[in-house]
Length: 142
Image 1 (cartoon, one colour):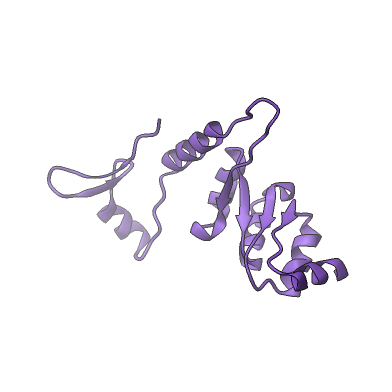
Image 2: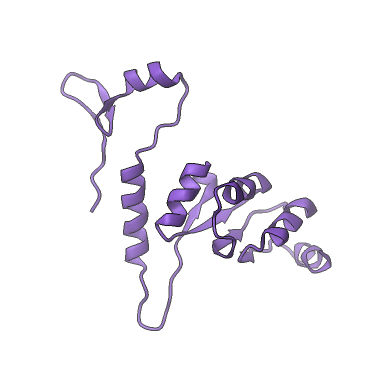
C-alpha cells in the first residue's frame, strides 16, 4: 500500500514528500507540476499487481498519457511494467524520446491525422484503437 506524501502540516504549510512547496516554488518558479516519484511508482505497481496474470489470462494495465506525460513519467511507467495509451502525435513523440517499448503502446483517440498514423506505424507501436472505418482504410493504405 502506498502512503500519500502530499500533506498540510499543523501550521498550514503544504508539503510534497517532505518538501515545503513554497521552497519548491521559489526554486522552480510557478506554475510548476510537482510529482512524487515514489508515490507514482507505488500506485503504478499497485495497479500492475492488482491485474497480475490470472491463470492463463494476462492483463495489461495502461497509463493514459493524456493525464500527464513527460519523459520522466513515461520512463517510470515503462519501468513499473505498465503499458501506455497515447492520443496524439505529441504524446507518441514523448514516449519515443523516453525510449518507451513501442510494442507496449496503444494509439487511441479520435481525429488521428495521416501523419500521426504513419508515425505510429514507423515506431512499431503495439496497436491502434481505430475510431472509424475511414481510419481503418487510411491505416491500410499507409
